[in-house]
Image (cartoon, rainbow, N blue to C red; front, side, top):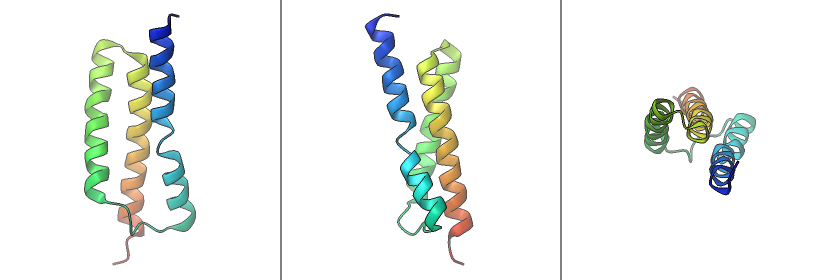
Length: 86
């Protein structure tokens, strides 16, 4: 594995873990007031497109990172809809 592949995997890993603290905090506190649904929808849509791109080209760092981010953004969207006071 050359340094470009290592950089891709490290970048994918770091991108993948960016949402973990937010997902955990929302799950524990059930507080979603400061989460922007519009931003989460944009994140979900963009990562879904990146995921399709990665699958089409079989780019594993892109597939892994965007698959995880896509799942976490979907979870945050669910939390936003489920925990918003009506």
